[in-house]
Amino acid sequence: MSPSRFRLAFLAFLLMCGPLAARSWSPGPPVLVSAHLGPFEVLDRISAYEMGWELQFARQRFSLLPHWVPKLIPTAGVMATSKGVLYSYAGVRKDIPLGGRWVFSPGVAAGIYYRGQGKDLGGAL
Image (cartoon, rainbow, N blue to C red; front, side):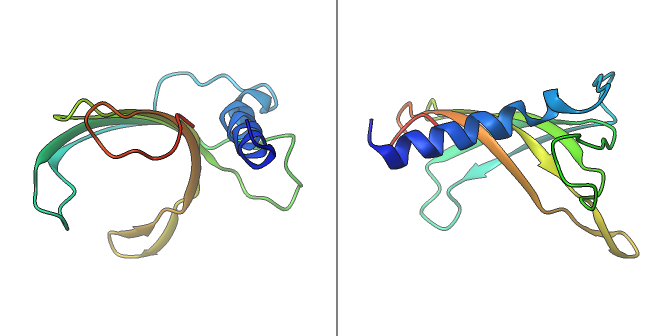
């Protein structure tokens, strides 16, 4: 394994373990469960369909992060396509209300990818 791939895999591992480092963190039941279903690779010719689930938990303060970092929302999800692609991920996000019903939700997550008959992303992480 090349040094750059090792660093990337190690960073992904740290990101996936981040929610476990929360002070007295107990995920409890999800605050929000969402599902999606639809065409995959819309900009190419549609040759597959996807389906997925995502769980969002209550906002948490993570002890490993600096005090100025706001509370973040732990999230985990899974996606599968009709081409046999599987993708599972875990990470954090921050919801920023924009007014009305609009919300901007930047986030970061690390995941594990199984290619199936889909695109080669160069590795599983």
